[in-house]
Image (cartoon, rainbow, N blue to C red):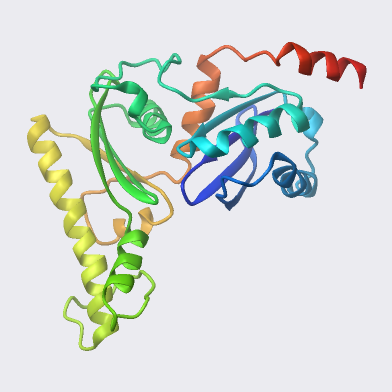
Length: 269
């Protein structure tokens, strides 16, 4: 089985893949200071509850946009699953060109979305990821990654609105029934939701115009279904796009070998 770890700015998602089936998916709040032992206590309990065994994990792959979390996640794989994880980075074999000024600056999640999105839908393609930041990533017909756009995520926008305006309350995100709000909270909900839909449609339109041809649009992330309700420009919703990209990346690249000192320790256990 393959252990897949997607460490984002808000949550770390763990998943186990057995041949063609996801056997379990679990998430925990991202904390760069969380130790490998803390992860293990939580994760091994969930794996066992799902009827799986950690001994059956034969390989692992990690994608992270939080560099400080990588040490503990890598150690989790080594100490508790006895595997050396493959870490998603630009220098690996992605199967496509990364046509940006500095490939090492591109977040792993964006390349993973491009890999998985093109494999599923072909290209040209725009992948919209509703995460802590909302990203728009552009893939051409051959699968080459061309760059994209990074915007503040919707929850960041909501928190900034509450923090900066003393009389505006903290609100949840939802699709209001009307654009014109008749009190403060509905007016805020309308501005956030329909304003964000306007941002999505505006950027998609400009990207397509600059690209110079028709493009498919796929969305991922927890808020993708909510915003897809407000626009016809999002054609597909794929919640597991990043996880699937990690699986595909692991299939393309050699399985790393445990450091020699760790291998000797395992042999003596």
